[in-house]
Image 1 (cartoon, rainbow, N blue to C red):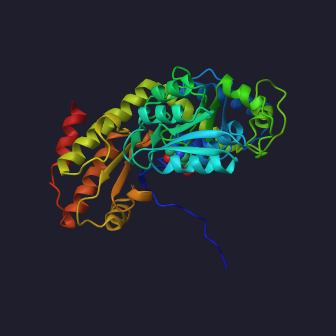
Image 2 (image 1 turned 60 degrees about the horizontal axis):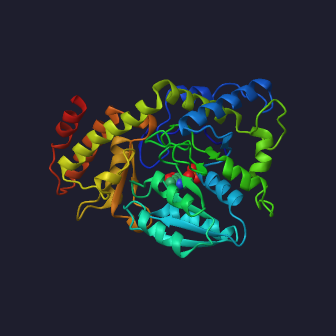
Image 3 (image 1 turned 30 degrees about the vertical axis):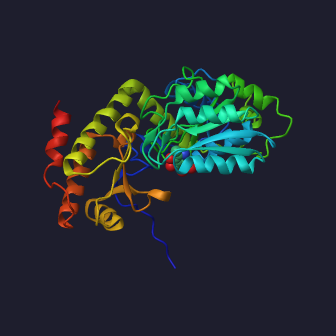
Length: 393
Ligand SMILES: Cc1ncc(COP(=O)(O)O)c(C=O)c1O
């Protein structure tokens, strides 16, 4: 038996992540591996931390990349801040709030669920009612940008409410980071996690996290040991903390850190506000095209994420047929619906490097061609002119 080297096909990734990784990041990934305690690597770690503080808009000293995907960042926040017997309010408006609930239960704590319809933002009034009804709660957790629906919630308001009731906050910013405003210090978030594979357009498998001083104080004064050795921030800090006396904790994914450094450097070079504006502009063009075609968004305009566009699948159109043809004939990946939205929506991502004019027009043209060919009830030919009008403005 011989095995051939794996050469992936060239795709345009326009789903819910991973997003397309630009050539300069792939080039950084391929640079020679050095030791994870090499002084030059330690210098790189310091820059990665500083750049992460910039993209997260925070001065938190405990800001670092976890050497594992977004799910590990989520778990890191929960296992460090939740203790057995705690009550945690979890706001759920899509798939990922459900995972937060799982995390709370696995920490031996009690989740109190605040439910909102999938496609809606988290309702602050419902959170306030839960806080009043559960004065024993010590923590509030919610998703900023629900990748399963394309809805964003008002972090500042939700955090303010939680603090008024003496609760710390955990915010999932996997899809929001670098794609739309996320201001960790200004909004006074206590713990936040993200992922590298969305609007940073880095390789998947790393999860930036940041903890406020209040959160760090709680972690440092826990009566119970954090049940996860790998994700115990008290231990991870010995490796990622300040100064040259870094102790071995785990072997960092050295080359992936080169890639993350390059991804963060690119955001810094573009400017965070410019990156947010680019995501917004390209979303407006895509939206104009999709709506001209006759497709409708499932999230109301005020709460729509520019980087994740969820549209209803037209009546009588088979979800999988369209996605398969887009992939096989046009090399474009778009996302299917998740959970209760499976088979009902398509999720079109314009994330990071993928948020480009040519991706907007490529996707609209291909979708129009496939839908028209299938006899779907769309206004064929209307999408591209509508998008171009926005792009030219
Ligand atoms: C909102 C949200 N949270 C958490 C995750 C989990 O991240 P990962 O797949 O990198 O583990 C995702 C992944 O898509 C996500 O969209």
